[in-house]
Figure 1 (cartoon, rainbow, N blue to C red):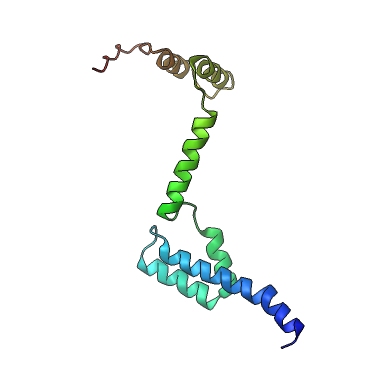
Figure 2: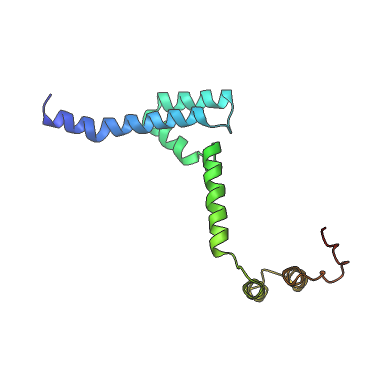
Length: 131
């Protein structure tokens, strides 16, 4: 085995086998597809190693496993905690901006404004305080 054989092996075949193996592993750990579809994807990836794996990775939805769903949920909660308005003034400024851009109607704006200020929404009875 000369240098170029090893070079081709390391540059092309090893990464191809790694991606192929990871795709097969991913097919079996997903909980959003059932047996028959797993068998179809397995056959596609095995008989069309490069193209089948590429197709699988492109059409594979995010959040296909429990760990991914937890990671997405954690990231979403961290994003909201970091960028959500924390006081009434910021919330009212955000609501005003949404209304001015046309994302909220006047009625939706008033209802959200009343919610932020802790008042009853227009046209609704005051909420009972929790004990």
